[in-house]
Length: 269
Image (cartoon, rainbow, N blue to C red; front, side, top):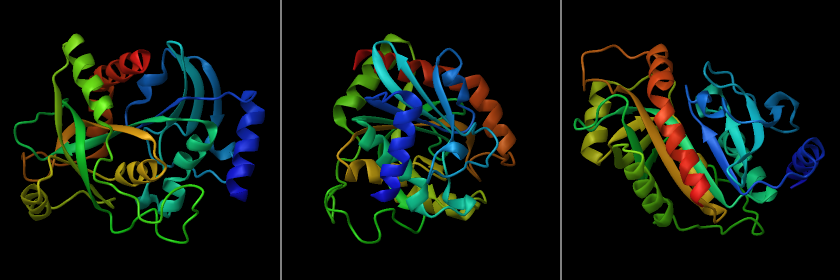
């Protein structure tokens, strides 16, 4: 709580106590989301107790801005477990957002398609997730003022947001997919055998983030929706070799429609 108070005091000072209702976490290659937004940008490295993103395609700044008539905070890049961050650091921003007044969280990432009916460039909305990172961000002493010791995760992704996403996508003529996301620790891409196993488990896409953030948001009783931009096929689904460069390139070309979808959803909230 002392760390949170220090972080909140700094952010309130820098933003004149700007009170966002909505937070958006941008994944790899989705920085285009902020191109037409103006507001107050703060580097992660300047924020007390915040982590630092070291991955290409993650700007490493918070943007406090308005989208339509909604106040929002945009996280331009996240902290990953594979960077050596404990999940406490990876999910710390979610607790900060909650304390700032955020009620609705949009999570995005770049992911590999496992479902063979999906194609590169598709958007997949999470129906659920499987956490195979091997850790849980709620491990440790619980703060009962923040949430329950054993929070329910049976409906972590908020149904009314999913309905809003479908309706908005239809209006925008966007072919929105839905499926189960499986989170692994990374940083190595998965083997063909692992992808085959994940498919048997029921996963439609695979990535290296998002599940811990969703877990903490659910713990904090926030409304949550998550999207994967499918930037590549997972190992064994195609013959192509996997690379982060491919992820970023697809993010630049296909990411715009995901950004458009989220902005239009926010304006309707």
